[in-house]
Image (tube, rainbow, N blue to C red):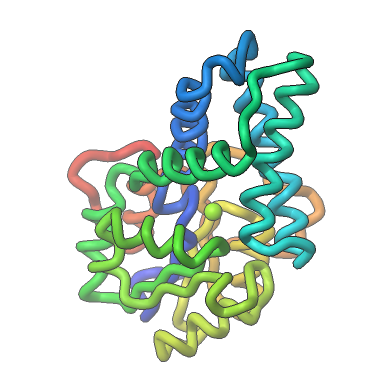
Length: 251
Ligand SMILES: [Mg+2]
């Protein structure tokens, strides 16, 4: 497929343009060091693995509409506190609200873009309509976009909490296309999550690029949808659109 003949490029945010996975790990690491009496003899790798499992399960509940955003944030902190207690027995008392608030602050402090994202967008922004379609909390996603200089380069930002529909529902992609006055047939969506991003955007009739930086295998149950391209780095992504970045950043 000729990517350079398209009119519009829409991106996922977390783990596509922005190193969300790294921010989670570094933010949680800060929290771990803020409360040494609470985390006691647990090592950080254990805490990180527990947090990852709690977060995956609770986002699944949130995506099925079983929780509000506020409930998600409090409940995952509460589950972490319960997990620490189950591992250590009696521990220093801590309010889940404190873990919730300090985690969100520490996480946001560590949100940075992958190398090469801003030069790539600078080369694209005069040739294509650019947008972001992200599942997440409006206030958090908007701060991340504003704080990383994406906001000045990408005109159309759609956050699931604001529009009341989330990926992989084709509706959120259609809302984004309408907001950018773009046609699905002339648009591509780039994202890391096979279900949410590749299948979701394909369901709305868009071309798709799977941003598979960590080299995961495609889930077998999704063999029915092929992306038009799969890339491993921002440099590879830029080259689909005929752009050579000065260094070849690895993301
Ligand atoms: Mg993502």
